[in-house]
Image (cartoon, rainbow, N blue to C red; front, side):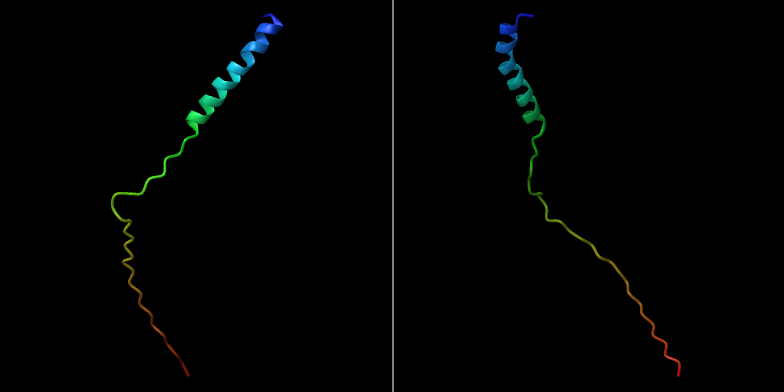
Amino acid sequence: MDRGRVSRLAPLNAAIILFSVAACATVKVQAPDKPIEINLNVKIDQEVRIKM
């Protein structure tokens, strides 16, 4: 390839690479429709034995 042609294509190639990377790295943050529910069904039994 001709060196002048390569230098003219370099910005185009860089733009294509940057666009493809930017399009893949998008993150969407959205609040849920329903509230978050945490169910803590825990039964705690404690037995204390003291020997004297």
